[in-house]
Amino acid sequence: MKKRIGSYPRVHIEGAGRGVVSQAGGVLMVETVRKTGLDRAISVALAPWRKPRAVHDPGKILLDVALAVALGGDCLADVGMLRAEPAVFGPVASDPTVSRLINTLAAAGEKALTAIRSARSEVRQKAWTLAGNRAPDTDGQVIVDLDGVLVVSHSDKQDAAPTWKKTYGHHPLMGFVDHGPGGTGEPVAALLRPGNAGSNTAADHITTARLALAQLPQKYRRGRQTLIRCDSAGGTHEFVSWLSQRGRWLSYSVGMVINVTIHQHVLKIPASAWTPAIESDGEVRDGAWVAELTGDLLEGWPTGMRLIVRKERPHPGAQLRITDADGMRITCFATNTAGRPITELELRHRLRARAEDRIRAARATGLRNLPLHDTAQNKVWLEIVQIALDLLAWMPMLALTGKARLWEPRRLRLRLFSPAAQLVTTGRRRILRFARHWPWTDEITTALARLALLPKPG
Image 1 (cartoon, rainbow, N blue to C red):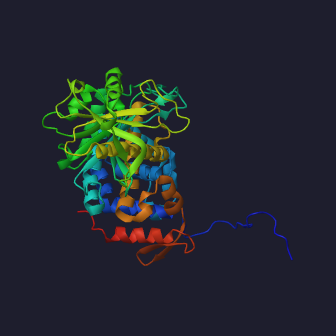
Image 2 (cartoon, rainbow, N blue to C red; image 1 turned 60 degrees about the vertical axis):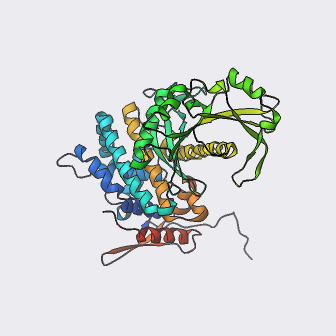
Image 3 (cartoon, rainbow, N blue to C red; image 1 turned 90 degrees about the horizontal axis):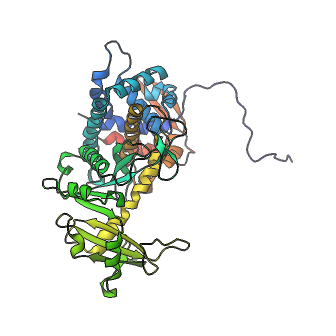
């Protein structure tokens, strides 16, 4: 009887094999690009920047970088993993060609950014139409969450500065469309700002909201069916007035800073005016109550604004702030939604925390750092990151079901994108054969079958 030494079996390597494709699950992203028509839209948008004798299309180059980022890359050179598999990803430009395109688009400034954003907006509407009742607007409302992201810089890049968290880098402001409890979310705005940019700068919130609205289908760019949510950084007179401006009529749910005046009003609320808060399943939330503030507190704010306050027992070990009262954590938000109970409105605002999940996904998809030096270059990089996140949201929305649709980028990469497959060529057909023993092979093949059933663009 032989004793086994070591925890893992020993594997012998004999040269290089043939007919094996790495990152074969990336074909899910390729099919998503094809069915939504993203490749054609980006190519048309960037046609003005294609040189007469160029071999590679600028749209394909930019989309290749986005695909590499979606598969786990974090710099321009990571497009090399697509270049190694031309059978799946087609011809991929060299690193110098990619760098030259980024420099060209950066030199074009807002003109190039606007072209890329217009293409994304056009394709977004197609993706939502293909998704049918699984689209984020299936209930007739679209929710856009605005939030800031701190991106740490480890070198002296343009506009990098000390942040409010004592780090060094940039402080972009981003917007995400919430897909609800049955899905994830997709980016619709990214405003690159220096690290020392203020959290509650109204002008930046307005600019980001404009970018987000421009990404939505035309019917959602104004009106009560579009809800803008943000934390207390957006709780300024200027931003709330802009949201409720005549002709725009947007719904909003905006966090407010607990100032001295609000704090004094909270202390005067009688016990009978507090209503138990609720959870998503309709059950009472333990240790939390909500109430609505009225009176002269709303003077100077837009007509129809409601101010709702919540008090909650802090979790063990949490430190109370000076604005808290009676051992309770106090928070407040403003909304212009009428005719709904304050418990429902408070729950809706609390679900804004899902934006933190979107930020975590963005950090894992190219936003852990900004790889380029100039601000103009990093603005293009932000658009690439958003395209990658779009694909990571559209593919599950169109092809996955159940818990798989909730998987974040890291899990999608480990389970669906990373497995290799055997490439078999028969006649004019190329077939990928995934390993039968891989636990998620059925998930991959079923998703590809769903994508195949979708109509072709155009």
